[in-house]
Image (tube, rainbow, N blue to C red):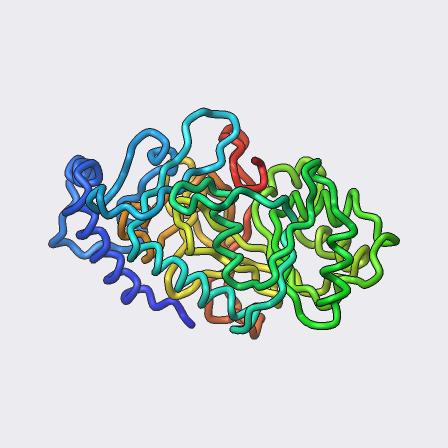
Length: 340
């Protein structure tokens, strides 16, 4: 669906009003910026919050007794983590939106699910780190969940073969964080120890590109190696942050670009926060209609990316805004699900 800017802008303005009214810290920021609700702002002129603000402050727009879940980021070089507070409505809307995005790839039927990770303690559904939250979020699209890494973070080939013997002849869902997939299905994987291949698998993976960059493995190289090594043909990278859970950007199989949807927008800014045109690298700014229990609707990230000129050559995503990720800013903290 085409992102109609003025419709998106109107909805975003309503969310800004909501947070201004219900989050005192957010109100102070907008007052400091002399935000005027009588003025009609362009998307690029709406106030954004730097992502690190969620590490320094508790930002919440609902009464504390309405908080249903608390999500924590996965920073590794700092003791400070982002805390994201969800009420039931916000949590429901995130799941609903994620479902509308992911089922376009997986279909509406739950598929047998292979998880390239260990069996995590996911019993506490109310206080989650980014890694567990992502696994839980994507698990709703799967059935017969099978975690294939043992306690030593090595592949349990016996368990993997049991899964493949049951489900390899039909479509099945594979989920993993990018570096985990690379490490376990490519670098350390022995295809001679499995009886069936992954040709019917649909892989969704995300995060971890900071480590992949150091290995000089880009997205296209990653896909080619997986296809050659274990015959996975359907591979989809996704981009998303704990600060905007549910509002993910899925890679288009036609042009290999990440694409926006009706719930999200992307802008690129330079070091002086000026908007950059397509083809120029800068900081990624994410806009989402989902966050209502906390003011995470407009966030400036530490990730570097660029908008791809939309010449509509790709028939799959010709009406969507396209962008690519170049990694994290060199001076920023290494963070993300697969860096845990």
